Length: 465
Image (cartoon, rainbow, N blue to C red):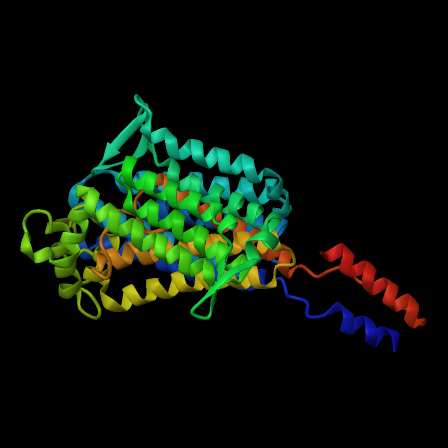
């Protein structure tokens, strides 16, 4: 009877599933290396001469990440890493295809950035054995994020690209500090919300069946609103402004379960958007292009129009890698890489990519759901929201669902800062999922006295909180 009681108390135990992860990684490598070979076949009629070297490098990176996960996070989610590997491999192949048309050398640079990203992935997995340690750096992370967001405004190192001042340049290396800031903001938001949850969850006035928050508790969301407007005004970066405010609003709602915060946040967002449209010319331009890109198809609307033509020409199954003209779209390797995929691989590939992003978000939210501590739940939720918002904003702009914002597509687009930060996000999600799926402490083998059994249950629950 004692053994039966122990089995019931131990609950469901997750399997490690590292073998399943390895099998999925093989499929992901087939996607990445196969797409790279298809580019050569489509353009030259033969496989690229460097296919073995490229494939070996890509395989070594993915296998190294798998080995590290197997050693230091054996209970981590088995789906996240293969999905990311498939997206990254496909992105490298598409950038290589565009590189063949424009001869920019970006494909080799992107592979180097992937190497840096995997190296930071390994350092994060090995160096951070317990995600709860990050809660100690709540305000340090917030200060670091603020400094990173200010850096592009400094003279000398700040650099404006395509009208947005979001870059810093140190010698030959350019970097977007906001990509690292978004990870730090998730950590700082989670730490803050865990500590101040009770006050923020209190309801104030009731309006139309919705409990609005108290006026004294509106400080955090008003502060994020001001920061978002500051980014929009000073850096002319509509995408980051939307991302940061939406991220905080989602985490605040998940932490408090109060719909009133969504009402207040929605009013602040639409109010800020209306003011920005009236005051700032670059916002008006983005909205005008979105409303009618064909009004100036060879001028301001050229990029969006060419992207839409590419989607239309690709149809259901695409023209084939190397058979289209995706280089006609400006910034096809970064902002409009989904247009290149739609043109040469068709609607089928676009839907497959969206499904892969959906899997990443679903697995991140699954980790948040089963995580045993509030801080880990909020960090996983925040990281999932970051990826979901970024994908929605980017692909929504490319497909003319919403105005263009200038963000990059995670793991696909060319850009070192985005790729590196997203690999760190995956490492944090794997660390949280490993902690959540890891079996808890076991009870002693034989307990005959019910009072002793109750005492042991209390001790186990205390150690797993």
